[in-house]
Length: 464
Image (cartoon, rainbow, N blue to C red; front, top):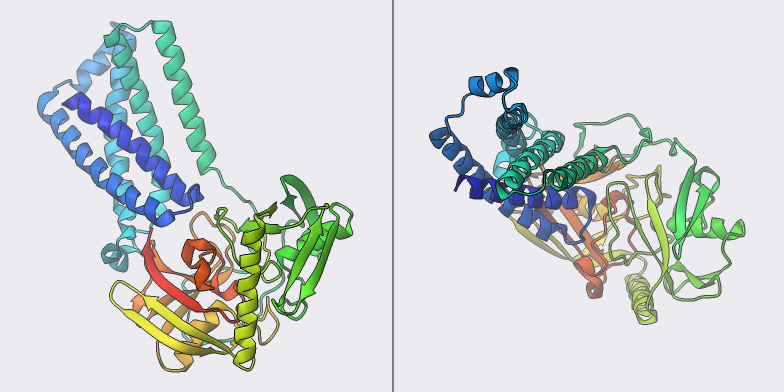
């Protein structure tokens, strides 16, 4: 039973590490399903760890002195040394498992609301790297003893075990290495809470002035400090969209682009590029991942750390996207140019709020990024606050977890429901045809997502 629990621990450890990094790096799109699986695996890991430690304490009496004497007397030195490494790593695993599990409880609101400040979730990400290394070493030693018991050739066993162990250790180091090394654009504003709207003047981005975008898999560099926007009605000087990057590539002769502005959709449309039609784009910011995307290309702000791809998609899919854009413009014209959202839904663990025909006004919260009068998703929440329908709080974040470049306001409080730990608000908005992961749930901060006249906005609570 001791060996069975040991190998079950090893299996669950690998599964937990895999799902944990999937969440942190966005390897899989359905992060909410992965988060649930990660939590379930953690419960089994804790249970098996307790059983394994209890069996070890009760039935195994191998003392530290015997191990050390075996090494010093050079009698079976390699075996005693491996036993020593196994014993030391075992107890360090227990210690670091505790250090990982406790801050990991910030994924539960009952813990996060009380301890998120004193026991930050960031410790979970720091100590899990050490825990992963210890588990790999411990499992490597276990494999060595298994090979001895099975009579496997020493040379073959050593080659396999050393190769596997080193590969896993290198992978852990690589995954925990910083992804981006770009200075912050503005001084940190940690712990700043904004209850009422107010203008902020932020300088234009600073840092490196070269970046990359790919067109059908071909990578092109560009100097983002020299790009001018095709939508000066939306963006302030020094800021631009994903579409503007494509225009820059065309102006420099890197692609052959034909496009026009379509008033019925309020966006630029690509007629052809490099002799082909039906182009769309995929992008994500620092810490993000590729996801389905139904958002106007010339509305999507670019910032440092962005991954941008222009890709060919199915013609029918592109036509459906364009039709959704046309319907938004028609709805806006029908409402006399006023953004009126038919349904706004806000759900938390304790409340479910529904609002209908919500009139939205611009608050110019990001007057550093957008022109006056541009309406963003965060204006929906602020308009509900203006109308006395909710109370809310905003917080500025320079970074969030593995997203090293955020630089946005986030809604972290609605009607007293406070975001804490890994629990907080996310949202999606747009056409009902592309609800949620169909293309509307994309990771653009609410203060950077321009709205035309969407059918709905849904803000909901998650714990990752």
